[in-house]
Length: 152
Image (tube, rainbow, N blue to C red; front, side, top):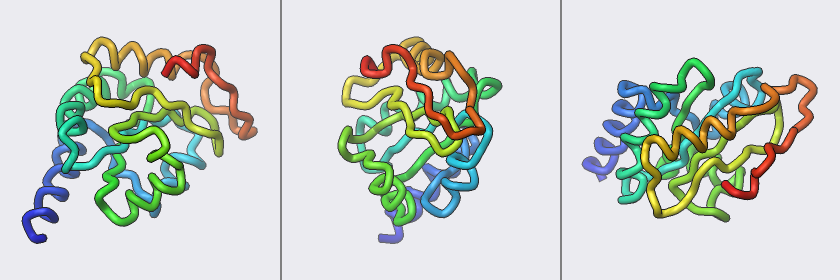
């Protein structure tokens, strides 16, 4: 158990240190993401997931490159509050790892990527840019779907 907790904490610190973003969970999601006027890209992951581990450096690289366009965060579903958030947002209907874009205050997320076929850095960057294209967050809370949303 101790080793697992150490590994989880280490991964969370590495994510922040390498630029994968802010740790997000049920305790800070509303204030940091949902009620924010900023655009957010969130990765839902588990330190025990092989695909998640493979995806992490790609997400970190893309988050560093695009940090001027959006805030980037990570949700560790192995932590209690991370699991609660993932359940509340129905993340498991599509699985993990999963990357979502939050573009409207109080709006529904757009799934940018999910699955076991890990994209290259350029593919993920292209998917994130597509998700970021269009209208910035709308303070009225009106969610505007991206064209081609179902392709993600």
